[in-house]
Length: 149
Image (tube, rainbow, N blue to C red):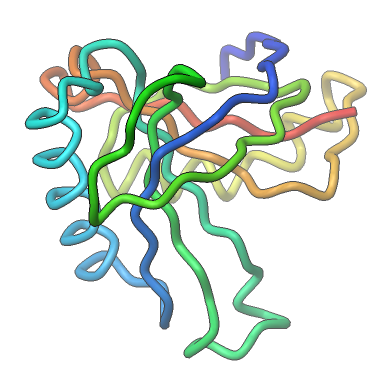
């Protein structure tokens, strides 16, 4: 698995949130509605979309799990409803590029912890993020960003 390291700055974000059980159907519906909002509001071409599961479903009741999709925006950008405004904390990430298929994502999750250990990295207590640019989406790719120390 090819790995790159990136330092992401703390940033202002516009986001949509789903609260409830994580699942492909809910996540896809949220992502599609957010992409439409981002395109209408002219922010999708300027910034990749980040998908952030905020809670660990092994310790958080499934009906309370938060899943956000967002874009980084300028500090002076007026955010149109129904999007909310928040802060992305940033930090150092191990970045993995992969095919956006069930098989590739499943294989990634099966190997991620051994890959992190192989590179002598340690994971920070922050959500693991999916990142998509419009070009990645067209080519059925995504990046997974693992927070590291």
